[in-house]
Image (cartoon, rainbow, N blue to C red; front, side, top):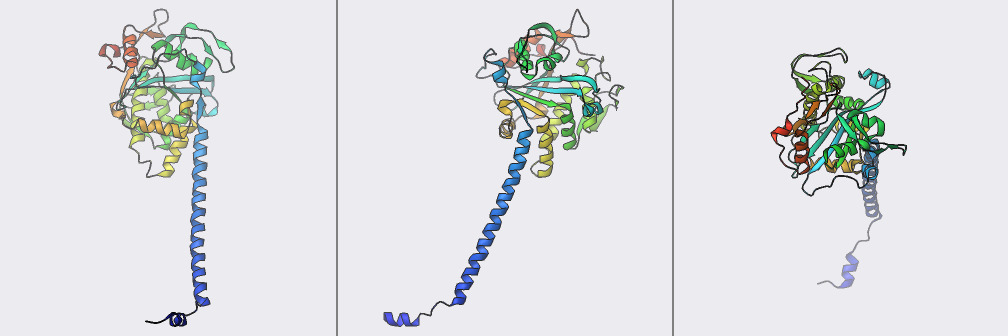
Length: 362
């Protein structure tokens, strides 16, 4: 066994070359690390920019603040109720090109649906409220802070243009007794962009449609519609039924289900570019209650609805009867309407008698 002096004598001093190799290795590893960090930061910045852009697209309305506490009670087992509006601003060049008629000023709630999602969130029912329905509009506060007095026999379609989204929610809650949990509005120009972004929507047209007003001409049977055609399809009233708003409600409900099915069937994760295009189209045209007015909140709500199959969604028109004073208007038909809203309030099965409307629109 050697002593310490022999051990020390056999040790070779570390060469300067070895030191340089280690230093070069350190430099290489350090360069790689810096490059990776730069990529992460750059990627993170891009993601943040995209997120901020989409998040900033969404318009929020504080419905709870506007309505206060004078609202229907939220029952513990009443599921979720979402009021969806399609707003039709017919002013401006873009809407004129879409067949809206550029000489008409203001915006209207052209389509209105109360979507009820029962507890468990595996199915849903959509109740369409005809735009020509006469309602008792409650007193509302307008955007400028002034008061809009209550009015009997007000047309439902006019509530939005007179006092905005919060008053529409208040009117729906007043006529139904249903607490609206969330509000969602999409303008029709954005609706067109959304359909184009997903590559069109296929619908089975129930009968030949020849609408001179919109220029829509379709034969009965399946058709894949682009954005402009889809907008004309959900707007058409002269080309189907008796020419009233009631005739097109079935088309709107049918198209909604086809649109939801198409979005759900697409591989959005497989195409980030297409996903962003769709998300940009949706958020630019979207107004929600403040509780949903962010990408995070919308994402959480969408995930909670993931179990709802659009194919199983039931669509119902609010039972209405032709108004005795004005046959061009309708009123809620009783007892059917009352039975329908009661079932939704209590998250109960809707009786068949509550689905039948005396006025059908031909």
